[in-house]
Length: 415
Image (tube, rainbow, N blue to C red):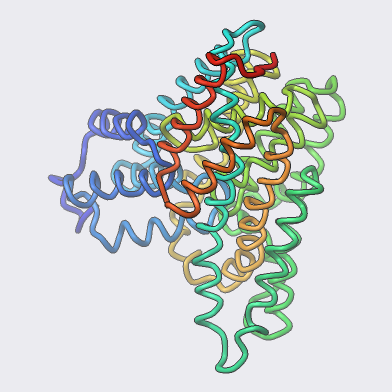
């Protein structure tokens, strides 16, 4: 809040209504969410200054998980404390969650009509192009920052580590999705070690990003690698514990934006636990892009495929819990995050790997397409997104319309 002026504080009711409105109209991904939150909190409400908002955005960009969701939660926290964080975050998340759960019920029913399957297959065909567009968008500022830091005449050498991390993420997503979380963490660890050797980062003991936020509970960090694995191993294959572990990885390890959840999720949902077919998965990713709010909502469609509405709610609860926890437990430490060289070093490795992973996800997503007409839709979507720079939502809607038309014209629409 500005200068401690209580007259500029929104009420909790106003936070619930205004953040809920953004949750309902927030189509277009993180750029649209940030613009809506800035307009509300800075321009119209005048509750935060430009500088406060920019620093909030910079702070949440250092965290794993959906940055726009964390920004909504953090703005609520800045204005009305924990109650504002909870109300703002829930208002932002719930509309899209309800929408995608309803759509998942329709698309994943035992006998959806052919026109609906065609629309889903059309939108799903465009998802590989969306992944490339998103990955390039994440990678571009990373490369620019690395280039600005490069000594004169040593641009190639300065960019080599960034390129290596991006390639590691690309190959992990394309060929070894089940290991992607390990690859992201390893790239961050390697970069901290590299900068430590060069004398520009702090001790290696501060490697995990969330340790800086949750250092009041150090034992939890050492238990984390074992507890979820033990839960999943003790449960029936594909049971609630496995679903919770999949969702937790998405919420706690998705460095680089929400789209990086796609390769993290595809391996578990399709290959390991067989909750969905490849075709159903790409349809679910398309639904996550078409509904308002964060792409992380896609996990609810996976949860629905695994265990119906309870599974959708469980997956969403576990996936979004880290975002709420980071803000509620660690928001007071955010200013330190912005100047912590160890945090910057960790993201110097993890963020390029995440960008590479998003692009690499296009390979299994494209390989999941089963019909020739879907490849034509993918080619058209690639041109629209990467050459003509059209909006993601409008391209996905056009692809869905193309799929609907294909179904009505008698194209093959497998169940």
